[in-house]
Figure 1 (tube, helix red, strand yellow):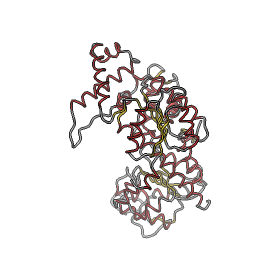
Figure 2 (figure 1 turned 135 degrees about the horizontal axis):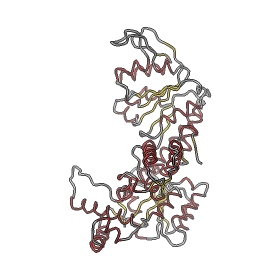
Figure 3 (figure 1 turned 120 degrees about the vertical axis):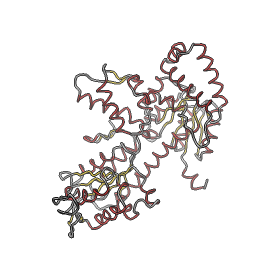
Figure 4 (figure 1 turned 90 degrees about the vertical axis):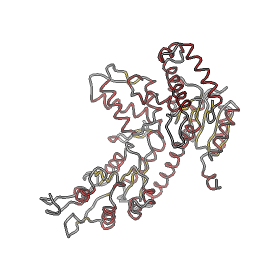
Length: 332
Length: 149
């Protein structure tokens, strides 16, 4: 089905993903530096691992360094190693990630978080292909392919002088851009099915499936945490489901209410203030919408869900219809 | 808007059998800087697709003759049209139609009454993916320039 990255779970058949995987396959045969950009959870490390696994370096190490998760003053020695006594606590010499990755690939995640001082040192490493451990006066040659990643727009970071321009161009030789999941929505059902299979295999007691309308809710949700958020949710659903069928009621409330929120966005208090009555009215309409959807348009049942009399609901619906008719910026 | 911007603006085909809706959408999208064309039903939509290329098709569901879902089905089985993002914009709010839209791989399912800013943000997302797709073409060209390892 579509494009599959065998062991790497980049799944989907959206045309842009097909193109990205073709690029990954082709760039794997070169030794070029690759820069992967995408929101968090879009699978940047998976692409990096894929490139490594399809390169001539496949049997050598793949070392991942999260530049945003390591305290800035430790990152240099993590990357380049240190000599004995280089700083307090450096009781023995230690190899850095670049040396550990020797012959293989180093994956520098969240490279946008790197300090200005370390950016200069990394630039030198990329130019000279040698590192200098902290506290050492000698350099060591390294043969390592660099794949970097960021969830920031590095071009903007360069413009605002937070990222070195020369380093940017060094890294940007082959840019790979990953779309957020909401921009390749048609892949969501494929991913849900894939993750259901994966976690069903782990919990063999029963096979969990998903109801069509629950799948629709997952499909329409915007997934700010992207594929990672989707995978985490599917795992939780499989683990927690008591019957073997995931229904709409099992989904988290923010996903259940998303379809209605899309129609009437959540109001927020801006600098210019807000019309509270209108916001409250819209909130009311959103819940009415959701109740009608759940009851497949049955007004009696919807009124019951909302704790209203049927006649009250009908009156509200009439007012809602004429409000939408008059509202500026709405198409009915 | 400069001529270059206009040239680069996404082309959207709006399909709706309601002339009033068609006109409102056309005005909204033109004001936002999109190039638009419109079709009054499914058959006209397919006829226009034969002649011109579009970045997005904004499609009503309930139309006489070919309905929106059938148009979508035709597009999906067509070599050139299968990758054009389809945004369904419809009064049909039921789960069955949504499920069919999902199965046909539509990019967005929006129901009326539709909020203008919501529509624009959904269209912007599709345009963003189009831009990303073009940049990946440039990346592919850059790889061709590289020496083999």
